[in-house]
Length: 103
Image (tube, rainbow, N blue to C red; front, side):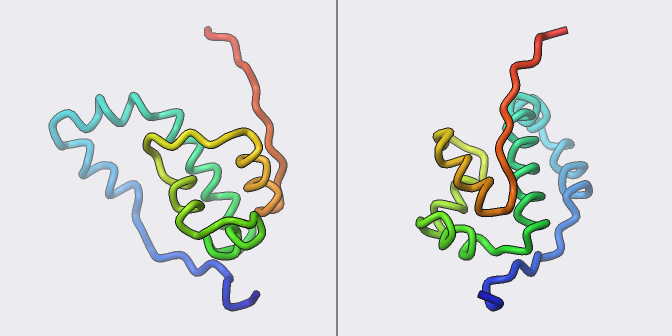
């Protein structure tokens, strides 16, 4: 499974975001998805800590790399709690979901 270790491609997200935020309408749409993006960042950080590729996570979950790619991207995909638990276990974590009262 050593050939499935995660080797990240360099990406300057801060620079990308700064450039993108200058585009008309981007900020409004980005703000609408802030919670989803935060959750995806958590997923990616967990996978990075585990040192696994999408292929390796897919193998551990009994699914495909394309399914993991969809799971780790924002969009119309709404994963089940069962899927999120499997992902968490695959990357050496457990899942916590909380209801936080609005201020």
